Amino acid sequence: MRDESERAIQAAIDAELRLLDPEVRASPSLVRELLDPEFTEFGASGRRWDLESVLALMGAETVSSESSVNVSEMSAVVLAPGIVHLTYVTDDQGRRAWRSSLWRRAGTAWRMYFHQATLVPSEAA
Image 1 (spheres, helix red, strand yellow):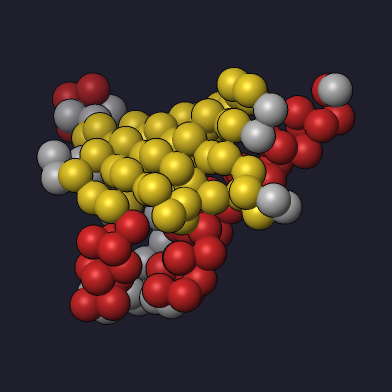
Image 2 (cartoon, rainbow, N blue to C red):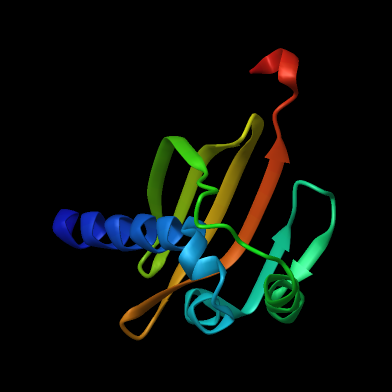
């Protein structure tokens, strides 16, 4: 059981990091593969996103392969078979945010079901 949990956690972490990759973010089809059809996000902006609104935004934005997000404090737990919860901090050129994602397995693929980002005030950094 432990090996199964470790594999689930690693698969969710790998998928999360792929979503942060500028080349993946530049491809709506690759992003669609990683997001659940029922995906919801509460963004750092305070806006609520769903799969289609995220894909529309990504299709309209220019993603530079130079812009990379630094990830730290990654933590993960298996909540139930096929459900992994990740938490971590991102730093995108000084804009820090706590992030929380729920990943669920769909067949052999892992897809992000829910994501929330909360900005870290500069005085707390």
